[in-house]
Amino acid sequence: MKRLAALLFATLMSSLTLSGVSLAADVQAGREFKPINPPLASPKDKIEVIEFFSYGCPHCSDFHPLISQWAAKLPKDVSFRRVPVSFNRPEWARLSRLFYALEATGDLAKLDTAVFLAIHEQRVAFKTDESVVSWVASKGVDGKKFGDAMVSFSMQSKVQRGDQEATAARIGGVPAVSVDGKYLINNEAASNYEELLKFADAVIVKARQEHKGK
Image 1 (spheres, one colour):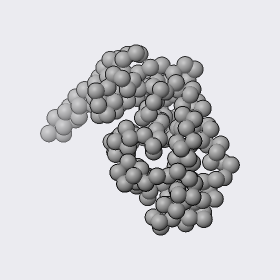
Image 2 (tube, one colour; image 1 turned 90 degrees about the vertical axis):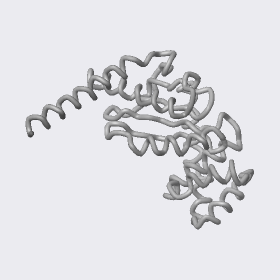
Image 3 (spheres, rainbow, N blue to C red; image 1 turned 180 degrees about the horizontal axis):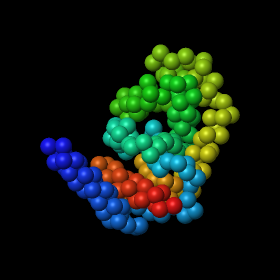
């Protein structure tokens, strides 16, 4: 029985390995992904996945629960980072500062989904910084601490860096997903968000094979 179990395990692992190699070989530039050239800066010891998004984007709101569940199950050699973008729109830049301020105060996990719901379902209008702070405070967050974080110079710098990173990745809209700093998942080729994440899985496999070849 032990020999049979060992044989079955070895067969399963071989199948998974071959499947991964096949998955990596199947993805093609111009189909599942677009090359990012020059590549974005990325960690050397991890395969970094970035989601470019905005709270103001209804598609990002729809995508949020799916990519959140997907990101929670990523393997240990993959890191996940979210970058809010403004496309030089002042109202979206405010929402980018909202994201970074929630991150800085440790309240992002508590209010992340709530922000999407407020904008796209409850039609809350975040037209001023004061309206943002008032809403956040109504959710039990320290309004003074959050407000100070939102207007700090570091938040402005983060918004600028996020927009610069999005420009470097040559994204034309959000949500957008990049892998390993070198590959932008091709939204146009995906028929739905689930397929887009399958493309991301396949490109992660490709990136992993490339890391092993170094």
